[in-house]
Image 1: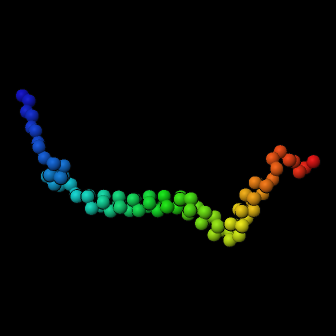
Image 2: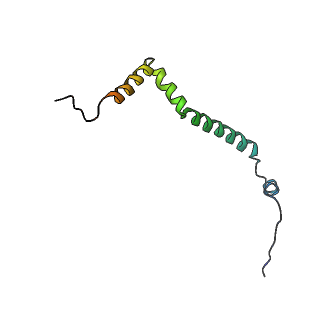
Image 3: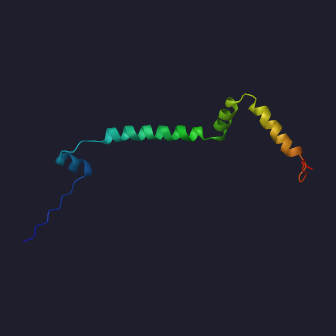
Length: 83
């Protein structure tokens, strides 16, 4: 003998029937915190934020960076100073 029972209910109804706890508020809180952490991590990796971090480490950083780029652009290519 074979008996088949089809139960038509939503996941919430099944959870309530089996006495399982409602985890929706906890899941929403965790997802909101995760989203906040992801947004702050993306903001920290923006080019503007990275430059601000580099220039606050050494206040004269902007001037040194400008001198470095100027040196690269004005130095003739292929010239060796060790001769």
